[in-house]
Image (cartoon, rainbow, N blue to C red; front, side, top):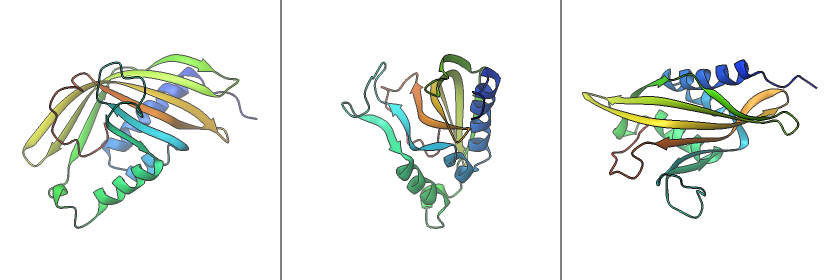
Length: 161
């Protein structure tokens, strides 16, 4: 049995995840998710359940894979020219850890910029990662992105915050 991850390893994991997105290494990014992992962007501030209230996005690993395949497709005209993104993270903080259950929670304030053609959009958010270990490797059980203006009229977010 391997040792539990250190706080530094948890923080490095979150930073690495953002880098994969910025570099559009989406298949590698998807590989960071546990098989039962989810990606969630709530529609309301303080939303507690993605199933009881509409969300901007609530996707399991299969839906994420389908979205990634669509983004890579040649006939994805909404991606001509292709979108690019940039994550600016404050230092992630480890909010909770339970080594016995292999459950770790980080919280990261961030700015996210998405650009396509001459259009650029800035989002501010707090990102909470619920992480676990699978065979000694860190994996995402839940990535929750709380946009500061989640209840505003938003344009289409093409990539992953």
